[in-house]
Length: 353
Ligand code: AMP
Ligand code: MG
Image (cartoon, rainbow, N blue to C red):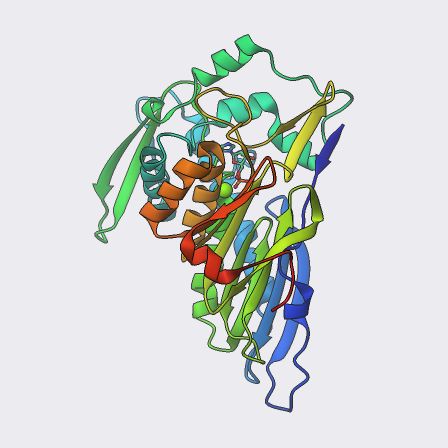
C-alpha cells in the first residue's frame, strides 16, 4: 500500500478577501502542481499590480528543470550525477554553487544528518515512486546488504568540491563526485523555491502581501489588508487533515515541516517513511513524528527541518539555536517541545486567538 499526503498549511481564514473599500488590494489565488507537489498562492495586489502567479509558477518549474531534478536531462543535478567518477568534474552555475556551498556546510553542522549525497540510497528505497503512485503491488523493502552497498556510494566525504572565483568575482564550485555518488536535493528544493519566489516578489512593489505554499514549505510576506498576522497551521501527524496548532507570523518568514506522515509506504504491516538516517540507510527513528522550522531563509528552514527530524529533539534544539531559527518538535508519544521564540508564535490545538 502506498500513500502520499499533501496538506494545505495556510489557513483558509487568512485567505479570505478583505471586503474593504475601493482601495482594498486585489486578492489573487491559485492552486497548481509543480516540483511534484501542490503550489498554493494567495497574493494581495495594489491597484497598479498585475497578477504574477503564472510567473511564480514558471519560476518554480524552471528551478526544477534547470537545476534540481535528478530525472530530467536538462538539469544541473542530472549533469553532476552523470559525471560521477570523472576526473574533469562538473563546473556549477552561480546558482547551484551557492546552494551546494550552503548544503555542504549544513552537512558539516548537522554531523551529516542532512546529506545531499544520499541519491543512491534514496533511489534504492524508491521514495519518489511512493509519491507519484508508481509502486506496483506489495512494496519490497530493500534488503540489508543492498542498503550497505548503497550507503557505500553516499556521504559527504565522497563528494569533492573545489571553489574558485569567476570573472564577476562570484564564488563558484566544481564538483567531483566519486563513482556511484548521486546528489538528491529533495530535502531543500521546496525551501529553495521559497527563496527564489521571495526574490521575485521583492521586485514587484504591487504585491502588498502573500502566502505561498510549496508542498511542506510556506512563505509569508508583507501584510494582510486587515493587518492581522498570517496564520500557518501545523498538521497533526496522527491525522494530518487536522492541526495541532497555528503559527501567527508578521511579515516575511519561511516555514518548513518534515514529518513521517508526508510520504511513506507500507509493507508487511510496517510503515516506512521518506526521511533517511544517513548513518544507517533506514528511515530515521529519533523519536519524532514531525519538526517545523521557522526561519528567514527557505533553504535553511527546509534543510533544518530534515536534519532535526534525523537528530531528534535534544540535538535538534541545539541546532536550531545555533542557526537562530525557531523549531517545534512533535514526539512519537505525542509530546510537543519547542524553542522559546516558537512559544511566542505558536498557539496550540488549532484554536484562534
Ligand atoms: P523533507 O521532506 O524536506 O524532510 O525532505 C525529505 C526528502 O529529502 C526525501 O524525500 C529525500 O529525497 C531526501 N532525504 C531523505 N533523507 C535525507 C537526509 N537525511 N538528508 C538529506 N536529504 C534527505
Ligand atoms: Mg527539508
